[in-house]
Amino acid sequence: MPTTSPVLPSRSPIERSPCMCRTILGGPARRMLPMAAESASKPSIQSFYEGLSETGLVRRLLEIARDEDLGPDRLDLTASVTRSESEHASARVMLAQDAVIAGLSAIPELLEVFGAEVKVTTALRDGDRAAKGAVLATLEGPLDQIVTIERTILNLLGRLTGVATLTAEYVQRAGPGVEVLDTRKTTPGLRVLEKYAVRCGGGTSHRLGLHDAVLIKDNHIAHVPTGELGSWITDAAQRAMELSCAFFMVEVDTLEQFRGVLDVDDGLVDYVLLDNMSPETMRTAVEMREEAGSSIKLEASGGVRLETIASIAASGVDRISVGALTHQAVTADVRLDIGTDR
Image (cartoon, rainbow, N blue to C red; front, side, top):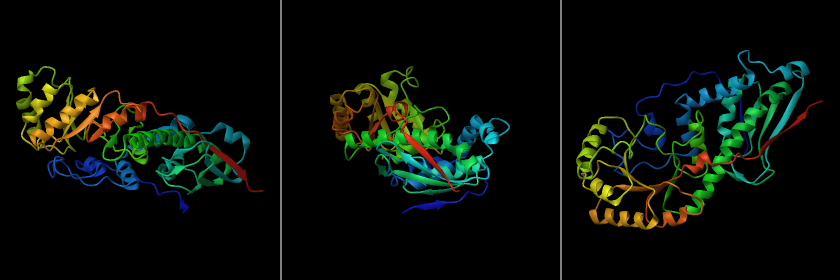
C-alpha cells in the first residue's frame, strides 16, 4: 500500500552509544551476552535502517551528496535561469529493469537535507522485488526543486538497488540454512547504506567497522607461533570480554591454525573465518568442530562467486561473507519522469 512521507523535522545526528552497534546487528553488547550464545533474530529491514540512521552517518552521507551537487552556496544555476519555481509538478520514479529495491527509506531525509518542499509517496518498500516499469515512488512539489534533487535520488536508488539485486542472487544460490554476509569492501563513505542494501537483498550485515567487533586476521597473528596460537587467542578474547563489541572472530587459513583455535575454552571465540579454503577443506573443518563439541560458528570467505557459493554452502559452514556484494554490484537503471500541472 502506498505511504506518504512529508518532509521530516530537522534533527541533529545522534551520538553513537557503546551498545548501538550490537543493537543494529541484532543483540546486546558482548559483555552483556556473548555471541557464542544464540543471538537475537535478524532485525527487520526498517529497524535496521533506523539503527543505521541513528549513528548520524546516513545524515552526513546525504549532506555530502547535496554539497557535491549544489556547492558551497547551495545553488542550482540551471534551475535559477529557467525560472520554474512557480510550476507545480508530479514525478514518477520508475525501474527500467527487474530488481530488488533499496534506498526508498532514505528519500524523506534526503528531501529534508536539500530543503525541498516536496512530498514523496512510495508505491513499494525496500526489499520488494519489482519488474521493469514498476513505479517506486511519486514526488509532488515545485518543479525546480524536483529537477534539482532528481540526480541525487536516482544515484542513491540506483546504487543501493544494484547492491540489493546482486545480494538477492547470491542468497538464492546459497540456499537455505546459511547466511550470506557483506564485508568492509564498500565504497568509501557509502558503507552504512550499502550494508542496508545488502539487508534489503536478504543478506546479513557483518561488523559495521573496526569499532564494533573483533576480527583477528592473518596479519594480526603473523608473529605468533602456531603452537602458541591457542593461548594468544585466549588472552585476546578475555580482554575483549571487557569491551562493548558485537562478537569475537578469528581468521585462519589452515586446518592446523583452526585446531589451535579449537583448543581455546568454548565460548570465548564466537566465529572462525575460514579464509580461501576449498569446499573439501571447509567440510573437514566442520567435522573437526563437531568432533570437538565446539559452539563456534564457521564462516567461509575469500573468492566467493555466484558460480561457487552453492558448493561452499554445501560444505556445512554457517555463514559466507562475500565482498562482491558491494564491490561488484552494477548500478540499477532507475529513471524519473516529470509531468507539470497547467
